[in-house]
Image (cartoon, rainbow, N blue to C red; front, top):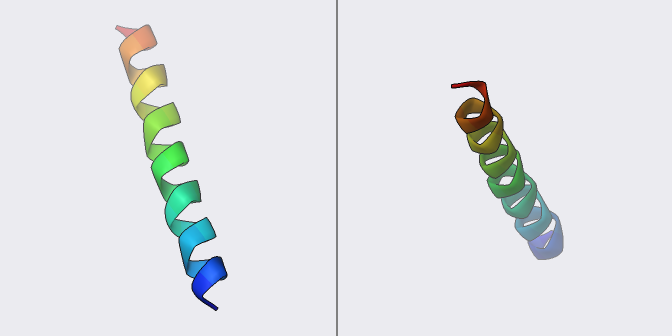
Length: 27
């Protein structure tokens, strides 16, 4: 369960980072 939580957090951080990168490229 602990590993699952860590993976989910990491995935969320990666998704947020990717979204931020796309937003920067857009403008």
